[in-house]
Amino acid sequence: MLMNKVWDYIVNKMPGELMVSLIVMLVIAIFAIVLGHAIKKADPTKAPKGLAFVADFIVDFSYSTIRKNLGNVYDFVAPYFIFLVFYVPLAFMSGLLGLASPMTYYTIPLCLAFVSWLGIQISAIKYQKLDYLKSFTDPLPPWLPVFIPINILSKLSPLLSLSIRMFGNALAGSILMLLVYWGTGLLSNAVFSFITPSAFNVFGVIIAPALHAYFDVFGSFIQTLIFVLLSMLLIAKEIPAPVNREIKIKQEK
Image 1 (tube, helix red, strand yellow):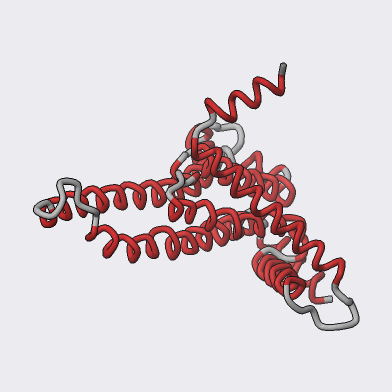
Image 2 (image 1 turned 135 degrees about the horizontal axis):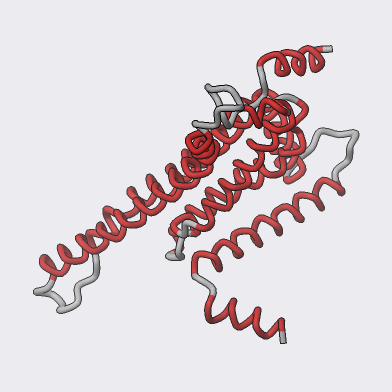
């Protein structure tokens, strides 16, 4: 019975954006399995080639970027950021296939931002300890909790800024493309209506590809870069300067 309800929800009730999101994650999972199989077959005594080289490059680049911004102590978050680097562009570019982009469904950017926000709070609690609790009353002493509501909003602001930035850009791009297709359709009908009553959207075919390249391709990589770097910087920001110096000294040794 439970499986029937789940299947009924997926087929009849699930929003199209969530369905596309599942498809994107399935594609990433298949790609990861293929890469893993290629790594197992690769000869460790020789330089990696083909898919093994791709996997090696992705892992090395991801870990080096994370260690540069966060240090070795955050190696465990590498899979999350690698997932983002694949998921966000593919989710944006799903619009090229005429599918509903998951990024225009606020729940999905919010969930991604929540994971980053959770990492920020865990980093703060781990390295600030009691100072994290004291930060809720800053700049006043703990016994004068006047600024608690403001500081709570300050703690929540990364969650909102990360999610709304991505959602807003995706939604704006989708609305602009909808207006472009609507406008070029009217123009095509006005110009070519003497040939056929329902003229083909000629101007849409000419104009839309360049705009798709900007909003769906270029924009997707820009939004991925911003989201990943901001997540890293906000996590690193919660590490106090003395602790950060101590971590770097240990890494150099």
